[in-house]
Length: 365
Image (tube, rainbow, N blue to C red; front, side):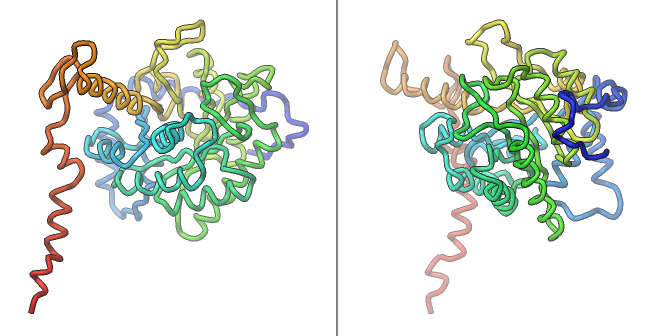
Protein backbone atom coordinates (compact mmCIF):
# COMPACT_ATOMS: atom_id res chain seq x y z
CA UNK A 1 0.00 0.00 0.00
CA UNK A 2 1.10 3.57 -0.60
CA UNK A 3 2.68 5.28 2.38
CA UNK A 4 0.31 7.85 3.88
CA UNK A 5 1.24 11.48 4.27
CA UNK A 6 0.61 11.67 7.97
CA UNK A 7 -0.02 15.41 8.15
CA UNK A 8 -2.83 15.02 5.65
CA UNK A 9 -4.07 11.62 6.77
CA UNK A 10 -7.72 11.34 7.78
CA UNK A 11 -8.58 10.56 11.38
CA UNK A 12 -9.46 6.99 10.39
CA UNK A 13 -6.82 5.98 7.86
CA UNK A 14 -7.80 2.34 7.61
CA UNK A 15 -9.28 0.48 4.67
CA UNK A 16 -11.83 -2.35 4.92
CA UNK A 17 -10.24 -5.76 4.66
CA UNK A 18 -11.62 -8.90 3.08
CA UNK A 19 -13.57 -10.20 6.06
CA UNK A 20 -13.96 -13.59 4.47
CA UNK A 21 -10.22 -14.01 4.50
CA UNK A 22 -9.50 -13.08 8.08
CA UNK A 23 -12.68 -13.16 10.11
CA UNK A 24 -15.07 -15.72 8.64
CA UNK A 25 -12.28 -18.05 7.59
CA UNK A 26 -10.98 -18.21 11.16
CA UNK A 27 -14.33 -19.06 12.76
CA UNK A 28 -14.70 -22.43 14.41
CA UNK A 29 -11.15 -23.61 13.75
CA UNK A 30 -10.36 -26.40 16.18
CA UNK A 31 -7.04 -27.18 17.86
CA UNK A 32 -7.05 -30.48 15.96
CA UNK A 33 -7.07 -28.66 12.63
CA UNK A 34 -4.25 -26.42 13.85
CA UNK A 35 -2.27 -29.49 14.88
CA UNK A 36 -2.92 -31.09 11.50
CA UNK A 37 -1.66 -28.01 9.75
CA UNK A 38 1.43 -28.08 11.95
CA UNK A 39 2.16 -31.71 11.04
CA UNK A 40 1.72 -30.94 7.34
CA UNK A 41 4.17 -28.06 7.56
CA UNK A 42 6.63 -30.10 9.58
CA UNK A 43 6.66 -32.88 6.99
CA UNK A 44 7.11 -30.61 3.95
CA UNK A 45 10.28 -30.92 1.92
CA UNK A 46 13.21 -28.50 1.79
CA UNK A 47 12.90 -27.20 5.35
CA UNK A 48 14.25 -23.71 5.99
CA UNK A 49 16.39 -22.93 9.04
CA UNK A 50 14.26 -22.72 12.17
CA UNK A 51 14.38 -19.60 14.30
CA UNK A 52 12.17 -18.42 17.15
CA UNK A 53 10.74 -15.79 14.79
CA UNK A 54 9.98 -18.29 12.04
CA UNK A 55 8.18 -20.60 14.49
CA UNK A 56 6.10 -17.72 15.80
CA UNK A 57 5.31 -16.48 12.29
CA UNK A 58 4.18 -19.95 11.26
CA UNK A 59 1.88 -20.20 14.29
CA UNK A 60 0.30 -16.83 13.56
CA UNK A 61 -0.22 -17.65 9.88
CA UNK A 62 -2.20 -20.82 10.51
CA UNK A 63 -5.99 -20.67 10.85
CA UNK A 64 -7.33 -20.16 14.35
CA UNK A 65 -6.20 -18.17 17.36
CA UNK A 66 -3.09 -19.02 19.37
CA UNK A 67 -3.24 -18.84 23.16
CA UNK A 68 -0.22 -16.98 24.51
CA UNK A 69 0.41 -17.37 28.27
CA UNK A 70 2.48 -14.68 29.92
CA UNK A 71 5.47 -15.48 32.11
CA UNK A 72 7.82 -13.35 34.17
CA UNK A 73 10.68 -15.67 35.09
CA UNK A 74 12.56 -18.72 33.89
CA UNK A 75 10.49 -21.12 36.00
CA UNK A 76 7.27 -20.01 34.35
CA UNK A 77 8.87 -20.30 30.91
CA UNK A 78 10.07 -23.80 31.75
CA UNK A 79 6.62 -24.87 32.89
CA UNK A 80 5.05 -23.53 29.68
CA UNK A 81 7.57 -25.52 27.65
CA UNK A 82 7.06 -28.67 29.75
CA UNK A 83 3.30 -28.51 29.29
CA UNK A 84 3.65 -28.99 25.53
CA UNK A 85 0.31 -27.18 25.14
CA UNK A 86 1.41 -23.78 23.84
CA UNK A 87 2.96 -22.65 20.57
CA UNK A 88 4.33 -19.40 21.98
CA UNK A 89 4.44 -17.30 25.13
CA UNK A 90 4.94 -13.71 26.27
CA UNK A 91 7.28 -12.08 28.79
CA UNK A 92 5.20 -9.67 30.88
CA UNK A 93 6.70 -6.33 31.83
CA UNK A 94 4.16 -6.12 34.64
CA UNK A 95 5.31 -9.51 35.92
CA UNK A 96 9.01 -8.70 35.63
CA UNK A 97 8.56 -5.46 37.54
CA UNK A 98 6.54 -7.07 40.32
CA UNK A 99 8.67 -10.22 40.65
CA UNK A 100 12.11 -8.58 40.44
CA UNK A 101 11.44 -5.26 42.16
CA UNK A 102 8.27 -5.88 44.12
CA UNK A 103 6.95 -2.74 42.44
CA UNK A 104 4.03 -2.07 40.09
CA UNK A 105 4.37 -1.66 36.35
CA UNK A 106 5.00 2.08 36.33
CA UNK A 107 8.31 2.36 34.50
CA UNK A 108 10.58 1.44 37.43
CA UNK A 109 12.00 -1.71 35.82
CA UNK A 110 15.05 -0.70 33.81
CA UNK A 111 16.12 -1.98 30.42
CA UNK A 112 18.80 -4.04 32.18
CA UNK A 113 16.19 -5.58 34.51
CA UNK A 114 13.95 -6.61 31.65
CA UNK A 115 16.73 -7.81 29.37
CA UNK A 116 18.30 -9.93 32.10
CA UNK A 117 14.95 -11.54 32.90
CA UNK A 118 14.27 -12.06 29.20
CA UNK A 119 17.61 -13.75 28.56
CA UNK A 120 16.89 -16.38 31.21
CA UNK A 121 13.27 -16.74 30.10
CA UNK A 122 14.21 -17.40 26.47
CA UNK A 123 16.77 -20.01 27.52
CA UNK A 124 14.30 -21.80 29.78
CA UNK A 125 11.55 -21.71 27.15
CA UNK A 126 13.53 -23.96 24.81
CA UNK A 127 11.79 -24.21 21.45
CA UNK A 128 8.75 -22.17 22.54
CA UNK A 129 8.97 -18.76 20.81
CA UNK A 130 8.91 -15.89 23.30
CA UNK A 131 7.48 -12.43 22.69
CA UNK A 132 9.21 -9.70 24.69
CA UNK A 133 7.48 -6.71 26.24
CA UNK A 134 9.59 -3.81 24.97
CA UNK A 135 7.38 -1.21 26.67
CA UNK A 136 8.11 2.22 25.16
CA UNK A 137 11.58 1.19 24.04
CA UNK A 138 13.18 2.49 27.25
CA UNK A 139 13.97 5.96 25.94
CA UNK A 140 14.35 7.75 22.61
CA UNK A 141 14.56 6.22 19.14
CA UNK A 142 18.16 5.10 19.71
CA UNK A 143 16.98 3.23 22.80
CA UNK A 144 14.18 1.64 20.76
CA UNK A 145 16.75 0.40 18.25
CA UNK A 146 18.91 -0.98 21.05
CA UNK A 147 15.90 -2.71 22.62
CA UNK A 148 15.06 -4.56 19.38
CA UNK A 149 18.68 -5.54 18.74
CA UNK A 150 19.28 -6.77 22.29
CA UNK A 151 15.95 -8.61 22.51
CA UNK A 152 16.91 -10.46 19.33
CA UNK A 153 20.31 -11.30 20.79
CA UNK A 154 18.59 -12.60 23.95
CA UNK A 155 16.53 -15.04 21.87
CA UNK A 156 13.13 -13.38 21.56
CA UNK A 157 10.96 -14.16 18.56
CA UNK A 158 9.23 -10.78 18.69
CA UNK A 159 9.21 -7.50 20.57
CA UNK A 160 6.27 -5.21 21.26
CA UNK A 161 6.67 -1.43 21.22
CA UNK A 162 3.94 0.83 22.58
CA UNK A 163 3.01 4.51 22.41
CA UNK A 164 2.66 5.46 26.07
CA UNK A 165 4.53 8.41 27.52
CA UNK A 166 7.38 7.76 29.95
CA UNK A 167 7.10 6.79 32.72
CA UNK A 168 4.63 4.25 31.38
CA UNK A 169 2.21 2.23 33.44
CA UNK A 170 0.03 -0.84 33.17
CA UNK A 171 -2.57 -0.18 30.46
CA UNK A 172 -5.39 -0.83 32.92
CA UNK A 173 -4.08 1.59 35.54
CA UNK A 174 -5.53 5.06 35.92
CA UNK A 175 -3.84 7.99 34.22
CA UNK A 176 -2.51 6.31 31.06
CA UNK A 177 -1.24 8.86 28.54
CA UNK A 178 0.13 8.38 25.04
CA UNK A 179 2.63 10.35 22.95
CA UNK A 180 1.38 12.26 19.93
CA UNK A 181 1.19 10.69 16.49
CA UNK A 182 4.61 11.78 15.15
CA UNK A 183 6.40 10.44 18.23
CA UNK A 184 4.45 7.16 18.09
CA UNK A 185 5.28 6.70 14.42
CA UNK A 186 8.95 7.55 14.94
CA UNK A 187 9.16 5.00 17.74
CA UNK A 188 7.70 2.19 15.60
CA UNK A 189 9.79 3.25 12.58
CA UNK A 190 12.96 2.92 14.67
CA UNK A 191 11.87 -0.56 15.78
CA UNK A 192 11.12 -1.63 12.20
CA UNK A 193 14.45 -0.31 10.93
CA UNK A 194 16.23 -2.29 13.65
CA UNK A 195 14.24 -5.37 12.64
CA UNK A 196 15.25 -4.91 9.01
CA UNK A 197 18.86 -4.43 10.06
CA UNK A 198 18.70 -7.78 11.86
CA UNK A 199 17.18 -9.47 8.82
CA UNK A 200 19.81 -8.01 6.50
CA UNK A 201 22.43 -9.67 8.69
CA UNK A 202 20.77 -13.10 8.56
CA UNK A 203 18.67 -12.91 11.71
CA UNK A 204 14.96 -12.50 12.25
CA UNK A 205 12.56 -10.94 14.72
CA UNK A 206 8.96 -9.71 14.54
CA UNK A 207 7.86 -6.24 15.63
CA UNK A 208 4.49 -5.73 17.31
CA UNK A 209 3.05 -2.24 17.15
CA UNK A 210 0.83 -1.54 20.15
CA UNK A 211 -1.28 1.48 21.05
CA UNK A 212 -2.79 2.32 24.42
CA UNK A 213 -5.07 5.05 23.07
CA UNK A 214 -8.30 3.33 24.07
CA UNK A 215 -7.84 4.14 27.77
CA UNK A 216 -5.59 7.19 27.40
CA UNK A 217 -6.70 10.30 29.24
CA UNK A 218 -5.20 12.69 26.68
CA UNK A 219 -7.11 11.34 23.63
CA UNK A 220 -10.63 12.53 22.87
CA UNK A 221 -11.81 9.48 20.90
CA UNK A 222 -9.66 6.56 22.03
CA UNK A 223 -11.19 3.94 19.73
CA UNK A 224 -10.90 5.96 16.51
CA UNK A 225 -7.36 7.00 17.40
CA UNK A 226 -6.44 3.38 18.19
CA UNK A 227 -7.71 2.33 14.77
CA UNK A 228 -5.76 5.12 13.10
CA UNK A 229 -2.52 4.23 14.85
CA UNK A 230 -2.85 0.49 14.21
CA UNK A 231 -3.42 1.26 10.52
CA UNK A 232 -0.35 3.49 10.50
CA UNK A 233 1.79 0.85 12.20
CA UNK A 234 0.56 -1.70 9.67
CA UNK A 235 1.31 0.60 6.72
CA UNK A 236 4.84 1.05 8.06
CA UNK A 237 5.36 -2.72 8.05
CA UNK A 238 4.63 -3.93 11.59
CA UNK A 239 4.26 -7.71 11.70
CA UNK A 240 1.52 -7.60 14.36
CA UNK A 241 -0.70 -4.75 15.55
CA UNK A 242 -3.05 -4.44 18.49
CA UNK A 243 -4.70 -1.94 20.75
CA UNK A 244 -5.12 -2.43 24.47
CA UNK A 245 -8.47 -2.65 26.22
CA UNK A 246 -11.18 -2.81 23.54
CA UNK A 247 -14.53 -2.10 25.20
CA UNK A 248 -16.70 -4.56 23.29
CA UNK A 249 -16.68 -7.45 20.85
CA UNK A 250 -17.99 -5.02 18.25
CA UNK A 251 -14.83 -2.95 18.59
CA UNK A 252 -12.72 -6.09 18.27
CA UNK A 253 -14.48 -7.22 15.12
CA UNK A 254 -14.35 -3.74 13.57
CA UNK A 255 -10.63 -3.58 14.21
CA UNK A 256 -9.98 -6.96 12.61
CA UNK A 257 -12.18 -6.28 9.60
CA UNK A 258 -10.26 -3.11 8.84
CA UNK A 259 -6.71 -4.39 9.02
CA UNK A 260 -5.30 -5.99 5.89
CA UNK A 261 -1.76 -7.39 6.19
CA UNK A 262 -0.50 -7.45 9.76
CA UNK A 263 -1.51 -10.12 12.26
CA UNK A 264 -3.52 -9.15 15.32
CA UNK A 265 -3.46 -9.92 19.01
CA UNK A 266 -5.88 -9.47 21.91
CA UNK A 267 -4.50 -8.93 25.40
CA UNK A 268 -6.82 -10.15 28.16
CA UNK A 269 -6.70 -9.65 31.92
CA UNK A 270 -8.99 -11.30 34.47
CA UNK A 271 -10.59 -8.36 36.26
CA UNK A 272 -13.77 -9.97 37.51
CA UNK A 273 -13.47 -8.34 40.94
CA UNK A 274 -13.56 -4.83 39.50
CA UNK A 275 -16.97 -4.87 37.87
CA UNK A 276 -18.01 -1.69 36.11
CA UNK A 277 -19.83 -0.97 32.89
CA UNK A 278 -16.87 -1.82 30.68
CA UNK A 279 -16.02 -5.09 32.43
CA UNK A 280 -15.83 -7.96 29.96
CA UNK A 281 -15.57 -11.69 30.32
CA UNK A 282 -12.43 -13.48 29.21
CA UNK A 283 -12.90 -14.79 25.69
CA UNK A 284 -11.86 -18.29 24.63
CA UNK A 285 -9.50 -18.92 21.75
CA UNK A 286 -12.45 -19.97 19.60
CA UNK A 287 -14.28 -16.73 20.37
CA UNK A 288 -11.18 -14.68 19.62
CA UNK A 289 -10.75 -16.55 16.34
CA UNK A 290 -14.35 -15.79 15.39
CA UNK A 291 -13.64 -12.10 15.95
CA UNK A 292 -10.61 -12.30 13.66
CA UNK A 293 -7.70 -12.46 16.10
CA UNK A 294 -4.57 -14.48 15.40
CA UNK A 295 -3.41 -14.63 19.03
CA UNK A 296 -4.76 -13.93 22.49
CA UNK A 297 -2.44 -12.99 25.31
CA UNK A 298 -3.26 -13.72 28.95
CA UNK A 299 -0.94 -11.22 30.55
CA UNK A 300 -1.40 -11.79 34.28
CA UNK A 301 -2.96 -15.24 34.70
CA UNK A 302 0.16 -17.10 35.84
CA UNK A 303 1.37 -14.22 37.99
CA UNK A 304 -2.00 -13.99 39.72
CA UNK A 305 -2.17 -17.76 40.19
CA UNK A 306 1.32 -17.80 41.69
CA UNK A 307 0.56 -14.96 44.09
CA UNK A 308 -2.72 -16.58 45.19
CA UNK A 309 -0.99 -19.91 45.78
CA UNK A 310 1.81 -18.31 47.79
CA UNK A 311 -0.63 -16.33 49.91
CA UNK A 312 -2.60 -19.50 50.64
CA UNK A 313 0.55 -21.43 51.52
CA UNK A 314 1.73 -18.64 53.82
CA UNK A 315 -1.58 -18.67 55.68
CA UNK A 316 -1.20 -22.40 56.19
CA UNK A 317 2.40 -22.08 57.37
CA UNK A 318 1.37 -19.40 59.86
CA UNK A 319 -1.72 -21.33 60.98
CA UNK A 320 -4.00 -18.38 60.19
CA UNK A 321 -7.77 -18.71 59.88
CA UNK A 322 -7.63 -22.34 60.98
CA UNK A 323 -5.46 -23.30 58.02
CA UNK A 324 -2.95 -26.12 58.33
CA UNK A 325 0.52 -26.34 56.88
CA UNK A 326 0.36 -27.02 53.14
CA UNK A 327 1.24 -30.50 51.98
CA UNK A 328 1.97 -32.24 48.72
CA UNK A 329 -1.50 -33.80 48.79
CA UNK A 330 -4.50 -32.07 47.29
CA UNK A 331 -6.49 -29.97 49.73
CA UNK A 332 -8.83 -27.00 49.69
CA UNK A 333 -6.00 -24.74 48.57
CA UNK A 334 -4.99 -26.97 45.70
CA UNK A 335 -1.85 -29.06 45.55
CA UNK A 336 1.84 -28.50 46.08
CA UNK A 337 4.25 -30.25 43.79
CA UNK A 338 5.93 -33.24 45.43
CA UNK A 339 9.55 -32.38 46.14
CA UNK A 340 10.83 -34.89 43.62
CA UNK A 341 8.69 -33.32 40.91
CA UNK A 342 9.83 -29.84 41.90
CA UNK A 343 13.42 -31.02 41.58
CA UNK A 344 12.57 -32.48 38.21
CA UNK A 345 11.10 -29.17 37.06
CA UNK A 346 14.27 -27.44 38.23
CA UNK A 347 16.41 -29.93 36.28
CA UNK A 348 18.24 -31.25 39.33
CA UNK A 349 18.95 -34.71 37.90
CA UNK A 350 20.34 -33.25 34.69
CA UNK A 351 22.54 -30.88 36.69
CA UNK A 352 23.86 -33.73 38.84
CA UNK A 353 24.65 -35.71 35.71
CA UNK A 354 26.54 -32.71 34.32
CA UNK A 355 28.55 -32.33 37.53
CA UNK A 356 29.36 -36.03 37.52
CA UNK A 357 31.19 -35.57 34.22
CA UNK A 358 33.63 -33.27 36.03
CA UNK A 359 34.02 -35.19 39.27
CA UNK A 360 37.63 -34.51 40.40
CA UNK A 361 38.12 -38.23 40.99
CA UNK A 362 37.95 -38.72 37.21
CA UNK A 363 41.03 -36.54 36.78
CA UNK A 364 43.25 -38.08 39.46
CA UNK A 365 46.44 -39.65 38.13
